[in-house]
Image (spheres, rainbow, N blue to C red):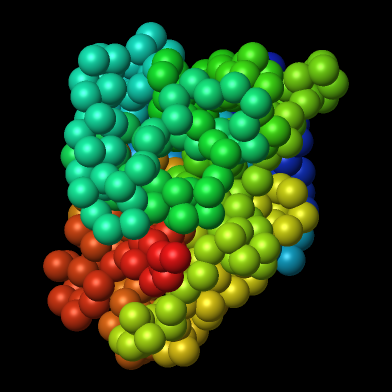
Length: 410
C-alpha cells in the first residue's frame, strides 16, 4: 500500500480551518464511536469521522468536499460533545459544505436557498396561495367549538409576539397550523404572523450559506422592528432556530440597535400555563408518551449558547399526561433521528434512515406509544422515515399538538 503524502492546502482553505487545532486530536475514535454515520455501507463504506479528520490533517480537503459525507452528517454534535479535546467537528463539516460549488450542492438544498431569498419562502409559494391557505384553515378552525371568533392577525402592530409558519405547513401540512392557533386563541394572545417573507426556517444553515442566513435573520429583525413587536418566536425547526438565533446575535454584535428579544416556542407555552392563560386536562392523554430531544434545540444550543432546551418541553409534556417515560440515552446524550442539518430535504434517504437506527432502537426500548417532538424535520423523519423503516408501532405528535388537544376551553 502506497503511503499517503501530505498535500498543499491553499491559503484560503487554511483561513477557514485556522480555528481548529488538529494537533490536539488524540485519534482516540471517541467521535466515530458516538457518530451514527459509522458503519454505513455503500459509497461511504469504511468512512467514519476519525478517518475524515486524518484526511484533513494530510491536506485531503478536496476528497472530503467532493464526497457526500458532509451532507450525510446531520451536525448532531454527538462527536464534539464526547470529544475529550472538544474539536469542533460540526464546524469542520460546515466548512466542507461551504467549500462545495453551489451548483454541486446535492438535491434541492441550494435551490431552496435561492428561492427563499427571491420569494420569501423556499418553495416560491405565491402570496395569493399563501393567503388563501391561511383563510381556509382559519375558516375550518372557526367551525370548531370554542374558536368561533378566531381571527388570524396578519402584519399586526404593537403585539407581544411574532410567529412564523414554514413552507411545509402552507404546501402540505396546513392542518398543523391549527395547533399553534388554538393555543394562541385560548391564551387570548396578542400576536401576529407576516404577510411577506414568512418562511420561518433558516435555509442558509443547511448549505453553510452564512450570507443567506444573515439576510433571512435581518428580514425577521426588520419585521419585528417595523411593527413594534416585543418578541420573536424562533422557528420550531432545530436548525432553523439555531441558525436564526445565531444570525440575530451576529446582527446585534454588528449594530446594537438591531437587537430584538426572542424566545423558543416552549417558553411561550410555559408562560401561558404558569400565568393560567391556558389550562389542560391530563386525562385526555392516557397512552405512554416519551420525548425526543432535538439535537439543535438541545446539544447544539447548549454548546453554542450555554443552555439546551431539555427541561422545558418535558415540563410541558408532564402537565399534559401522567404517562411519561424517558428514552435512553437521553438529553445531551440522545441519538439524532437522522434528519437534521437539512437531511430531510436532501437526496440521501437510505443514509438518513440508517443514521436514525439508534433513535429507532431507543424508541422501541422505551415502550412508548406516542413520541413527542418539537421540531418539524424530526417529526417528519420519525413519522415518515423511521416508523415504516423499523416497524415502529407509535404515534408521532408535536408538543403543541399535545397541548392543543388537551386544552380546557372556558
